[in-house]
Image (cartoon, rainbow, N blue to C red; front, side):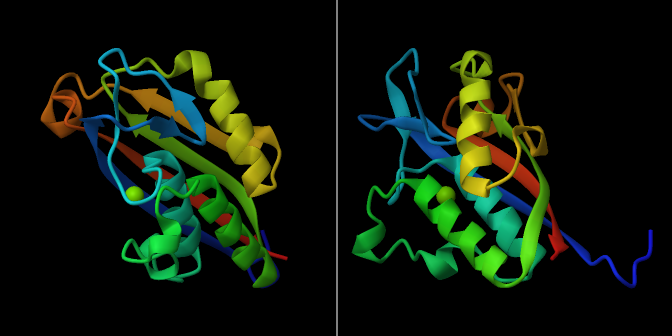
Length: 166
Ligand code: MG
């Protein structure tokens, strides 16, 4: 690889939100059903997966984090669809002259099982990221009943993103 002509950058992102009654459970823009009717608490729709990916993209270009662009104090972001925030950041990155090589992510949740919905989630994310499906990894794991995710106090997500300058 000629590193002089091919500029690449990597970023990582992490997020966690509380599981509470009376809220929707949305991951990667997909509405899921929790066996105990729990959902994620937050100012936006609290989509931890989309938030972790958004932060990974911003991190790759050292542009700060999601809260800098969409502050939780701002009423206009109340209950906002986090895929919209993600698409805004993708636009920012593309306008700065960068494109996404790939994104990989993991969601840590005891329940519900994400496997039946994972392809729908990947498809949603790939559309917003404006990349082919094979460039978007979404994995799910339990936390073996350990820690806040294991006690079902919350759901967390980690993501990495690789960008290439156009
Ligand atoms: Mg968040």
